[in-house]
Image 1 (cartoon, helix red, strand yellow):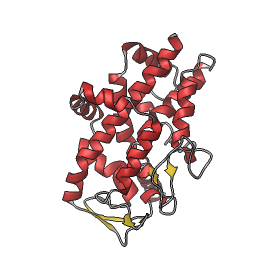
Image 2 (tube, helix red, strand yellow; image 1 turned 90 degrees about the vertical axis):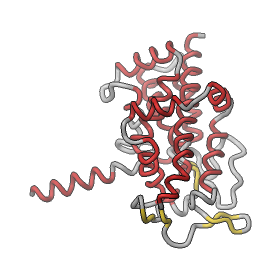
Image 3 (cartoon, helix red, strand yellow; image 1 turned 180 degrees about the vertical axis):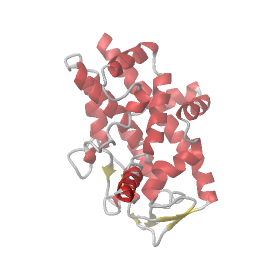
Image 4 (cartoon, one colour; image 1 turned 90 degrees about the horizontal axis):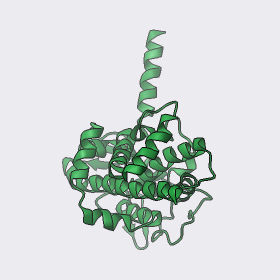
Length: 272
């Protein structure tokens, strides 16, 4: 019985790691956003989080949609293999996706007519969605499940999606949330904040898709007008990690800056 319980707990822990950006990435994004948000926004967030029965702070609450998985079809965007990116705010092949989820929950959070409980839920979802859309393999292809069906060898194990969720993040910023957020904020200039904030969720999705399709990611290989699944496993070498560390850091920074902008807008609308 003891062996069975230990095996069950181990399996649960392993399965719990298979989430977008992993818990570390999501918490870092939301910690950056919270620190960069306006003082009134931070106060409003604290007020909502105080009513939550599960989480004590905003950064921790951003893993809420993954434990257990909630609204599963809204964590990603599926595009066709010959896609050139999104041209509208509609999901290409579904009624709902992470793009529409961001727009919907941002609207709920900014609404004076919504109940505080519903706005709290929208806050936790919005923080998560903005992280998801900046994970490149969340704007990808359905037939390989966003890289879940592409195996990796070398410095990371498992599949390519999980490599980008967790292995690359922890290699780039470590596992200390406060330190990672501080280090990433130190690298954000006012000019970056201005530039990154002057964009919308569709732009963010297209940025992620461009990274997913890039040769350095090794998610797919261009043949004529389509990006096809690579042959065999992807080798995650020290060079692969080194090349992608700056990109992972920038995606986390962008997500934090843009989430802060979304939160300031939402809570500012309530004061108008």
